[in-house]
Length: 96
Image 1 (cartoon, rainbow, N blue to C red):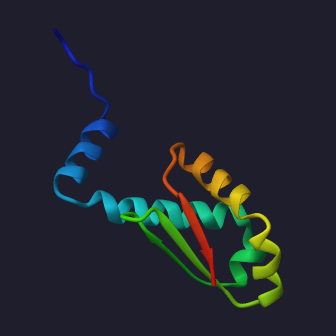
Image 2 (image 1 turned 90 degrees about the vertical axis):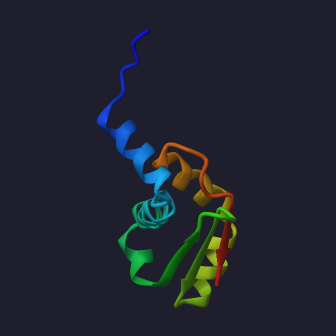
């Protein structure tokens, strides 16, 4: 029986084996947030931190009005970020 693996499969397996996948995922989620919200909101974002253990994305915004507006779109943002990632990674988004 023959198994075919892509280079991506092998790299992903190696990263998981040596516990590097959390940092890769963290960077991917944080970049997906930036891609989804666009440049204007990125400029008003102070920090983006993802915790892969709790699947929680914490975003600190510099404009209270923006935080209020995005609060109504949390579910849509989570869905768009997960769609961008191609997997259900983010389960919770906290706006600060």
